[in-house]
Image 1 (cartoon, helix red, strand yellow):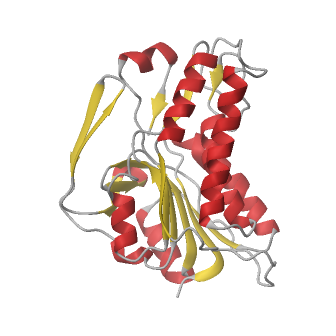
Image 2 (tube, rainbow, N blue to C red; image 1 turned 120 degrees about the vertical axis):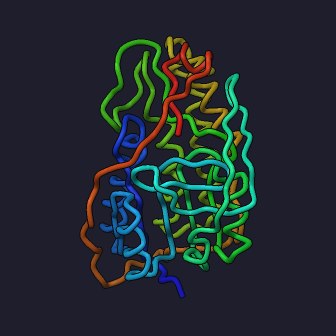
Length: 278
């Protein structure tokens, strides 16, 4: 039986884009530990995540990485969770992303757990398959997840707030909002609603708020809306993986924090805005 108030994070940070997600996860881990939760931070390595799940039996598995409709990859693009029998053909920004899954991999490891994957497309088939195989709940995206946009200048340090030319903050911040709600004792349904609200708050800033005249505004609002439109959740929306009360046991030190691989969006719309995805 998965343990309430125990969380395993897969904080890949190997390439250009994944650190933008793992940065928010690290900050969330600090908050969770301060609330007395047991948090096992890994670098997204296959063995590290397997060992953490086996040893600590978490109610929550939250990981950043790459994906397709039926597969989630770990550090080094190693397949980590896969559901056989699906062929992916995902359209995004004038291009198609195809993949065929041929094996069932680790589906049984997530029975009874809340799974949240910050990655491309895993919400299309992998998420529903995990729930069918016994996962208590799943949050993810059914199309490519856009991590940020740049209209001028270089890539900012992870967790740098948006400015008029670059936003690699609002996208992953909106995703992480769901697990903040979970850590604070909320249900999965409340977590998803909080994510939707956070995405919409940023969209409103770019479309009619204080950021509407920024050069980055059009692209940021466009792809924040894309992420919001493709956010999906399955399973028990009343599940509360963490209690509001602070338990007495101590948090677990980090196992490591290193890395994974990611790719750039190549399509024409993406090139115009310095767009990156997982």
